[in-house]
Image (cartoon, rainbow, N blue to C red; front, side):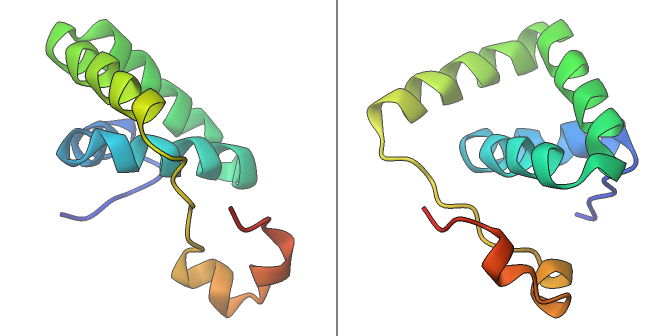
Length: 90
């Protein structure tokens, strides 16, 4: 599956594959990548509006509360740009 961070539809489909992990990544990317923030926020709106995806969201949030925080790895672009020092490692 290809993820296009400029396309809310592909973000929603990618998120649904592994919401526990992908939700954390999207939150991090929305914070660190303002150029993609609009599409990520639109994807969040669509997830919340869809009853089946909203159920996945609620279930993944419940699981996250019971598990340790997920550390978010750098993307290949961030590594190539030398941004490793810009991200607090969790």
